[in-house]
Amino acid sequence: MDRKKTIRSLQEKKGNKEKITMLTAYDYTMASILDQAGVDAILVGDSLGMVVQGKDTTLEVSMDQMAYHCRCVAAGARSALLVGDLPFLSYHISLEEGIRNAGRLVQEGGVHCVKLEGGREMVPMVEAILRAQIPVMGHIGLTPQSVNALGGFKVQGREAERAKALVEDALALEAAGVFALVLEAVPASLAREITGKLEIPVIGIGAGKDCDGQVLVVHDMLGLYADHTPKFVKRYAELGEAARNAVQSYVREVSSGAFPEERHSFKG
Ligand SMILES: Nc1nc(=O)c2c([nH]1)NC[C@@H]1CN(c3ccc(C(=O)N[C@@H](CCC(=O)O)C(=O)O)cc3)CN21
Ligand SMILES: CC(C)C(=O)C(=O)O
Ligand SMILES: [Mg+2]
Image 1 (spheres, protein in one colour):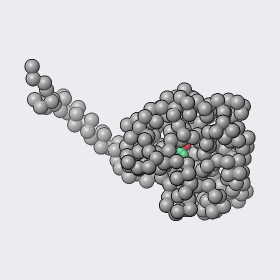
Image 2 (image 1 turned 30 degrees about the vertical axis):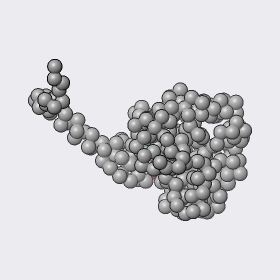
Image 3 (image 1 turned 90 degrees about the vertical axis):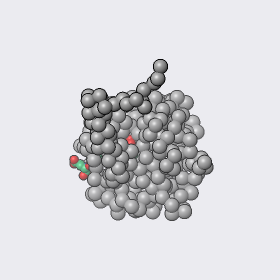
Image 4 (image 1 turned 60 degrees about the vertical axis):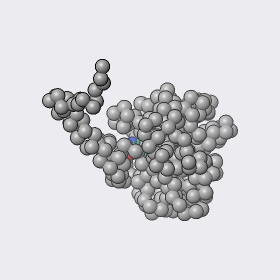
């Protein structure tokens, strides 16, 4: 079996030039598939609000729901590092609430570390959670929990001033102690600059090829979720189509009486 992945083993990849692989999962079955396939890290993303719950944003996902899905995924993640997304409003009210909620994902959800969205304004929160000995992953660029403030799911950092602010956010989060940083939907050139300036790994989604690793929503890359496929998604399979075809065959065969056959039946 694969050696268990750790924060240290992920960080070593930055020096070694081997890229870090991360995908989302929300349940045991998918987590088992990702783990067996050898991904470094599994993110229980609040994107579950969209791909599991069918909402238009991630904003309605609750702490109870995150803890539940983290627990489901933890049952299937033997080797991968398990990252739990802190949902909207779970780390915005007070340092105390942020520590409590990060701790809940560890204690109830079984994750190894948490991820939170935001730049230098999150430095005190990052430091507070780190004081509880919970490792923190940062997330800047397109931060979906800010969808209403940003005016939509839009590429970030195209203007020089905003690009500079993102570089400063990245440096501030690194100085605060995050062990890695997700960089979402920014120009590839800006992602390359930030990746070069940081000593911690930068994991990109829609941030070009020069990050230290990549993350995608697993339902997107498997072709299971097609409500809206961002440009940065590569579909490695068409499982949605495969599933529809399989269910159509089932409907046809049950309707006509072709299924079940004798070999699917018990003798008395
Ligand atoms: N299934 C899924 N996949 C994701 O990658 C994902 C989620 N859900 N939920 C949370 C966020 C939202 N994400 C997105 C969604 C759309 C674009 C996108 O295609 N933006 C276009 C159009 C913006 C516009 O309409 O102006 C762009 O050009 O920026 C980017 C990131 C990424 N995250
Ligand atoms: C897309 C990743 C980075 C995420 O935050 C999520 O899935 O919620
Ligand atoms: Mg998220």
